[in-house]
Length: 267
Image (cartoon, rainbow, N blue to C red; front, side, top):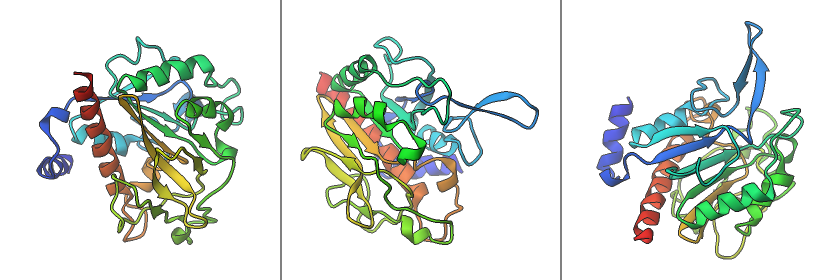
């Protein structure tokens, strides 16, 4: 299946020069654990190798099908452990509800990450509704780019019989998705952004930005108010007509393309 997918993507115009880009997923700010059926304490939630609904294995396979390599970083970001990373993804930083000893994002962390982006890195920031994420410290990093994750709830979906309540509006300034695309993103927070940012997705009530992109120095930031592309919503479970699996492909292609642009700008 993935060989077929890769052939389609290459046919669609993905340059071979994009192959081999390293996509690093943060395992430090998001570090949730639970006890499995055998009584063992294990990491879970938004992991590359996690194949259950709460994992990122399908999105990871999408990146790999595009020729990228996957990595993780389980320590606070530094210039050294981010070296060689083309795309850095931070998703759903822990609150005390999720981790009794969370690793909050500090001003020092934000400085390191912002400097990495400015020199050409591509950063993905994935928040959540305020009841399920530490927005206070995530916004220390967001502020570096003029962004702010708001303490609100957009595209609220009461249960899975109301999928249409989770359909966002594709932003007119989006260069990632097509206006006719139909996605599902529920219970996201909105994002305040500077005029230089592009609203990629907007809420279906009020039209508030829930995903934005912007340039920062030689690099790029993509921010979204929900983890969004974890397995539960890209595994074909959604009703016919929803295209979250295509969203994962299109976003991945766009992120990889931005790393190519950054490499050119360095020379």
